[in-house]
Structures are given as C-alpha cells and as structure tokens.
Amino acid sequence: MTPLEKAKNNRLEAIRDANSAKKEDRTDRMEDYLEVIYELVEQKGYATTVDISTYLNVSSPSVTKMTQRLDETGYLKYEKYRGIRLTDEGVRIAQNIRNRHGLLAEFFKMIGVDEESANSDAEGIEHHLHPETIKRLEDFMNVLKKYPSLFKRV
Image (cartoon, rainbow, N blue to C red; front, side, top):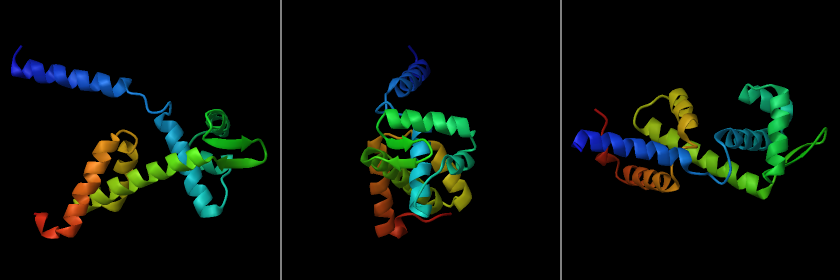
C-alpha cells in the first residue's frame, strides 16, 4: 500500500470511528435544545415552546416532540401548559456546550475572525470536538494569553 493509499485509508477509518462514537445517547439537536433552553432561562427566567421554536427555527410541534424526548431522557422536566425546567444533568450539559462555544468563539476571534463568523463557526463545531481536544485548545489559548508575543498576526 502506498503512503497516499494508507493516508486515505486512515482518513476513512477516522470518519467511520467519529460517526460510530456515541455521545451519551445525545444528538447535536438535543444539545442545541438544551443550550437554547438554558440561555432563555438565564435571560428571561423561563423558556416557552414558542421561544424555543423562534430561536431554533423549527415548528412548535417539533419543539413539543423534542421537549418530551428530553423529558424522557432525564434532561428536563416538561409539563404541558406548565413550562420547561432543566434537570441538574440538563444544566450540566447546557453549561458544557456553552463553555465549548465560548472557548471556540474566543479562539476564532483571537486569530482574527469577526465575531459573527466566530459564533457561527463555533455553533457548527461545538458538538463535535473530543473533550481532550477542547482541553488542549484551552491550554494553548492560556499560553497565548500569558505570552501574547508568541502569536503575532501578519
């Protein structure tokens, strides 16, 4: 096998492994819902299905279906006509996603990406990085903050 064929095969194996890895039985979409609910509760003190529908650009029936699913998996408590409340586990996950988003957006801004693009890009990849990758990125950024002369934009 040539080096090029080997590299292509390794890439295919990496894709397979990434797509077969389980994430505590959560989907990216579930995490988006938890993140939006958390942010709404932080901002307004509560979250409604209408608010969630607006921020995620999905129909109200879709929100109802997902909130019921999140209730069944123990990430939130949903009572029809009563409201939505994240469980401790739901809060933990939402805070983790928020922290990942913040770290990624900050990194993108450090390298010169505008704020809107930084947030958009962070939203796109915040669910897909391994915890060790996030930790290494955080360590790297801390070094750059401590020694800014190490990184000079051209």
